[in-house]
Image (cartoon, rainbow, N blue to C red; front, side):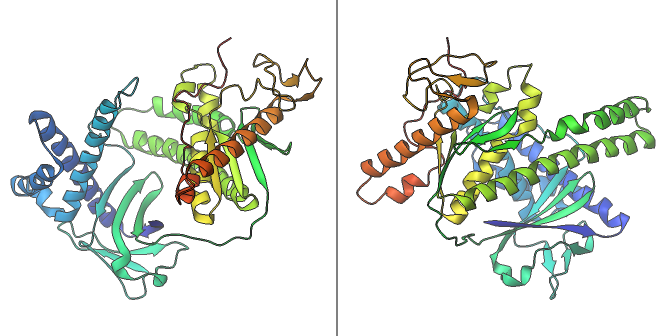
Length: 401
């Protein structure tokens, strides 16, 4: 599934009608969630049938396209099913009980195959549901002429701090060819450097949030001095939201470009299977860990691995920093010790470089073990898994002393 995005250009009255559609979609989702809470043994199809009841009971809900109402019900069921899965798996901590969506700067409404129409030149889109938002000009770099209209399965209108966007979900698998390089690499992510690889190279941590923190604090102070409900408060909130949006886009751009470069340059990429959700419980490092966005980088590594046909392996992080990459002996060290010194073989190396070599070795062992166990023909499937079999459920980087 490919997702192409373009910005919508229209009049202020058209944007207001899009707001009404987005708010109605949120109302349908919250109503379906309340219906599930008040009635036991409710399933996905019961929520879809309840959308028709909402359309007849509320006039503004009837204006929304019927398939858009069903898509909102599907979003509610997605949150419910995720909660059920967490309960069955006995997931530790918060089970993720579904919550009601509040009015926020961002929001979306999703159409399926009706309620919208593209022009012949694919430069204009028209929304034809009861809100009658009209035609919008599309601003983007993606060319939709390469795909047929029947391949567009979903059209999603997204509201952000800097405007309104439309996303086209296209039923097309992305596969790109590349020449094998014969290289393998292990990555050890960190805070001093974004990552250190098994070749001894490091990538500096961009620290997008830290660099913008001064401006964010200033905008927060301006927002706090405004009166609630005033136009100045709405403008100040929008400025603050736009700044946060810029930081998130900088972080995503860095992760996408770096992950693509790593995947294209190697035939195998090994990295740590970190549980970042557990690591951010450390209040002294939580902001720095969140700013580094390791999970986002990992997701893009796995995505580009599937696109370019590169093996990506997540290995357990236990003792990758403690083991000696030369002799394999355990050399215990604290987080403040940045140099690995082995008393058994005398090997001396940077701590992160030593860990990256251990991660690569574990990745190669995992791939070889998987290929041996699945010699009947399932090798490709196992090599393409996001998480190798037999991994540990814990993700602490520092072992218990």
